[in-house]
Length: 141
Image 1 (cartoon, rainbow, N blue to C red):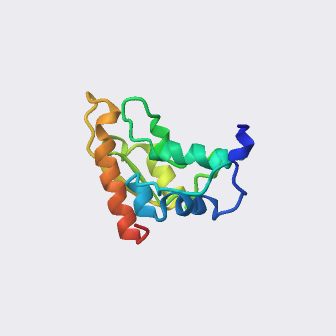
Image 2 (image 1 turned 120 degrees about the vertical axis):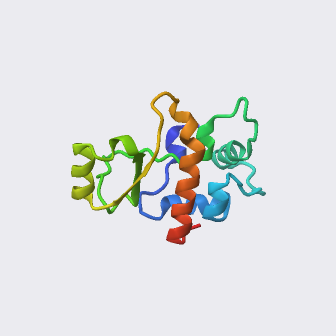
Image 3 (image 1 turned 90 degrees about the vertical axis):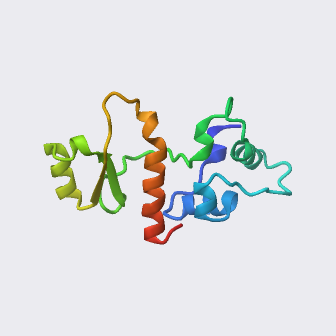
């Protein structure tokens, strides 16, 4: 299957249509509960995405199946139009580059405590929890 077979039209609603088509709603997407799609025989790209989403084999499955990965031809500006918030380790919250970015972009910056001796993967559950709460507060989940 050529990569182009998986392209969505370029507009601001595309990723929302993906979530609706394969998950039904944002909460299902967040929780990895893909829909049981029927009657898609012959639509190989749809079948491939459905199979990837529904694969619960945690030993061999690719974790990227849990995300909508957008590849874009142009750089996305790091502005408030594209960002809702930023979560960073508390240890860098006072860094000059963070302060400048926060002031230039005008978004909320949230911090979490991180231990330099722990690998980043140990913070995944914490960050998922914080982001879920953030999206519930926004009313999108």
